[in-house]
Image (cartoon, rainbow, N blue to C red; front, side, top):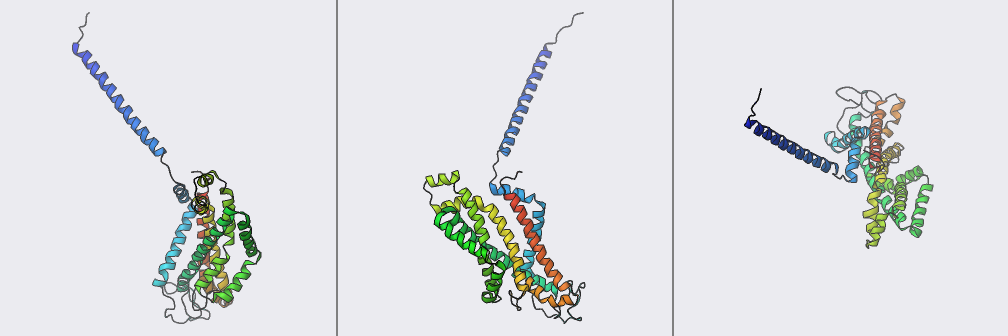
Length: 328
């Protein structure tokens, strides 16, 4: 039996093949465009600080520390406005103060009837100011001294490092107490300057060690070859590559200076009695502990502990984020 071929069937087949070819071409072009976009995304360059910020956000303890520290800064800034110091509070009904009670005095009161919650809030401002400002002073002095010693070397290095060795040889707590007694006069500015000007040697040694390892790098030789002056090489080329460990050390120094202020004030060498800080509140609570009134010392002590722990968490996160050997 013979079949006659339909002349239109060949045209339909050709049109179908042409349509399939066009579809494949379109799909291949789309795939090529997608691959190009993927390549562009993959080739997107991130700076050192962007990578460090990405690693820092993934550090859970560091983010907890940021949250706690931000809350403490908020309390230090706005707390004294909302809860002014030396409010008119009725005297304590019990010797040494009243225990915590809700909603009147959630942290209890002291023997003068002052609200401990009010004291903790107002004490945050002075303690945080001393810790932060002394850290900045020590960081600036330490970076300058360490950079000069590490970059120039020779006589400059020997003279500056001998000064650092002398400061390390003197008992730190002893010189802090003596300076606070004779020069501090119980005000915030004097104590800040004393803490800052006596705690910079550790930063200076760290910066010196980093500069000694970086001053012979290729990018430094290239900068010298094109005629860049020493000051610009030290502070614009070498210092940014050494900032990671310095930032971590400065955060830990802030935590230690907050504890140091509490220690000095606890021994009545720090903030005068007319002012209020966490250390000052602890100092005034010594006699109350004999009576078993734990709340007067517990809450300012917890404020110090939380702040220091938060700063240490942040320091750990910065150490991991700024370490060039860490991976995504």
